[in-house]
Image (cartoon, rainbow, N blue to C red; front, side, top):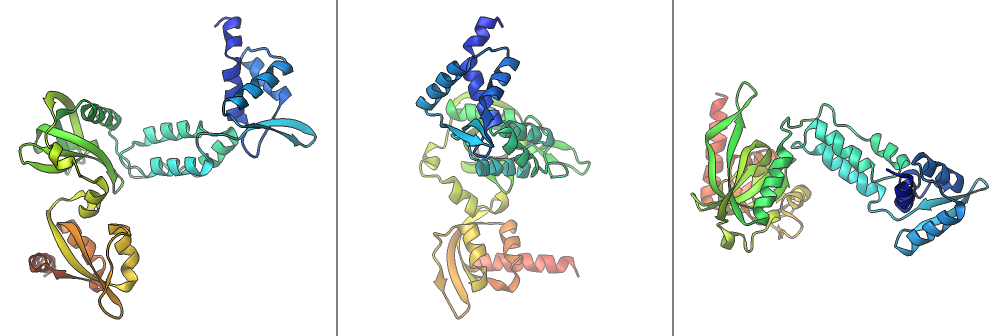
Length: 329
C-alpha cells in the first residue's frame, strides 16, 4: 500500500490502537499513539490526532482524557461488549460440545480481540477447552449455514443422519437418508445444537442433532408445516422434551416435596402453577413428552416426586421400574 493510501487509514488505525491498548483502567499517551501509528507507517502530528479524537467523540466513540502519574492519557470507554459479557461468550464456547476444540480456541481468540489487550489477558486466564467433551466434526458450522439458508429461502432439505457405533465411528443410521424435511429453527439444548423441522412423511415436528447431519442438500421445494409452526415456541418445546428424547405428549400431574421447588422451576420455568398439596408437598400440572428420559429424571429424585395422573403414565412408569428391577435379579 502506498504511503498516501496508508495516511488515509489514519482514523481507522487510531481507533484500532485505542481499542487494543486502552480500557476503563488503562490509557495511552499521545507519544505512544504516535509511536503505534509509525509502526503502521502512518505519520501524524499531535494537532491532527487531537482533531481525530474529537471527530471520533462526535461520532459516538467515548474517548476520555485522564492524568496518570503526571502523564496525560487517552482511553476508549465505549465498546460493543463489556468484559462480563465477553466472559459469558467465552464460557458458552467452552461449554458447547458441538464446537470442536480447534474451533473453540479460534472463536475465543476472536472474542479476545473485542477487548483491550489487558482484558484479553483476564479472559485467557479462564479458558479451559482441553479435555472437555467436544465433537470432532469440523463441518458443523457449514451445516448451520446450510440450514439457515434453507430457512431463509423457504426450502426443504435432504441429508444423511449418522450415529455412533461400538467402534467409536459415525455410521449412517438405519433409514438415515432423510428427504422432504422442512427446517423451521435451530435450538441449543443440553449442550447440543439441534435443527427443529417438519417431517412431511410422518406429519410430525422432529429434531435432529446438527453435528450428526451430513451431506445437507437444499431442495427446490417450498417448506411444509407452516401451520404447525405459526404458534410454535422453541422454549416450550425444550421444556416438554427431556434431553431431546421424543415421546407421546401428555399433561402429567406430579407431586413434589417442597425442597424441590428450584428443580421444578429450572425445568418448567417460573410461570408454572404451584399448587400446595400438604405440609411439605406441592403439585404441578405440566405438558411433557413421556419417554424413558423423563422417567429417568423422575428416578433421579427418588421418593421426593410422585406421578399422580394420568393412570396410563403411572402404569408406564411402573413397567419401567419393574424392567429395571428385573435387570438386576
